[in-house]
Length: 323
Ligand code: ASP
Image (cartoon, rainbow, N blue to C red; front, side, top):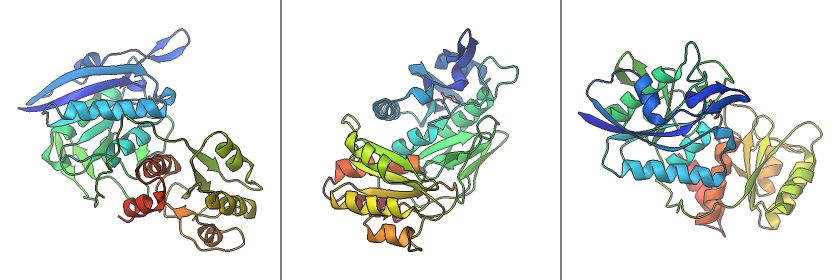
């Protein structure tokens, strides 16, 4: 008999229609009951909260990951976390950054609420529990299980607002897939070493600044004025911005504010190629390129790097992005 712990936090999977809209009110034990019979599996449950994941703070995220790790430390074979899909890629990524255990933490949720006529949550949860107990999921870090596919945390993105297949890992693909009650291995990505991040300590503010035609550096300076210790650029294409954003980057990097470059395109790496406001100029201005990491995952990595190496966050970024 394998033992998995289910940690509930809310999200659509736990939501019911109320007078003001959907509200996450269903506890983990009820989600488990709806997932149907799970032969050869003992599942214990606990609730961290019942909220929409769009309302999480970065501190909530640290608390969630710390609690999932505490559950894993109780000696189970794996942990499943249910949460809202809106920020699941961030929770899974933070969990993965610090994950130093062969056993998995598996995130799942739903696109349709608990009280929908045909909810997708029960099947997603049953799959995630199977995955958490499966030897095939060991050594893969934190995972995200949804609509029959399992993705490594690094690189996973929400790609559909409402349809059941909410997630993909563009350019990378899933690492496992469900086939009835079997878990089939597809890929084993190389995992960098876990970061020794203290989840009890605050993460510094890092803001994401979107690039668009005619954009200037005003939002970058505003973010720094609001207390940002680092910035992530959601750049055009393979990592290009406007000449004004290059100038602001050079100025801010010289003032000790690291700038990480991600793309507003969901698939493919950023590479310093072009001059005239392009990525080659950004690299010369001192920005670091985040390969294919999304801006939201890049934000967490940069915050962690600023904690672990306040004077040289670029070193942590380079190590983590090298694989
Ligand atoms: N749409 C979201 C969900 O799937 C809402 C949230 O992130 O809580 O749960």
